[in-house]
Length: 112
Image (tube, rainbow, N blue to C red; front, side, top):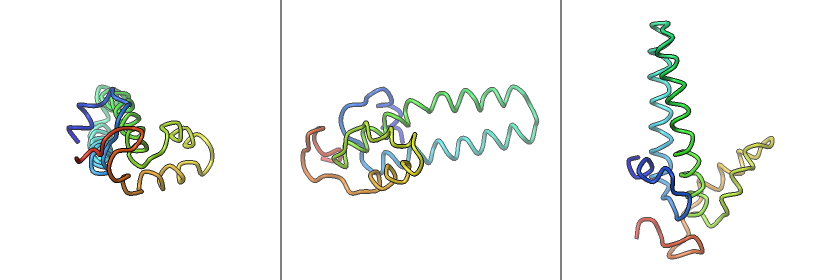
């Protein structure tokens, strides 16, 4: 997860499955905790914190997704498939694939 946050502005290179999924897990758990806290207290300040959290995690999630697609041997432009119906399922299939062994056109293996 920390690797994903440190490389949040880096779209080049590759991301391992663990890096990608831990960043997604952090975002999901953080969103749930913040949203439940905001709902329980009905505080406008906490709703603003939730919004800031969402906006703050968009770029790290997109960059990790692009690097994960690179790791599976696909172009980062495949992420645009999430904008069409059922395209998200195609992207999900791509990010679930195993890493290309060794070096591919996007760089060295992330765990090497």
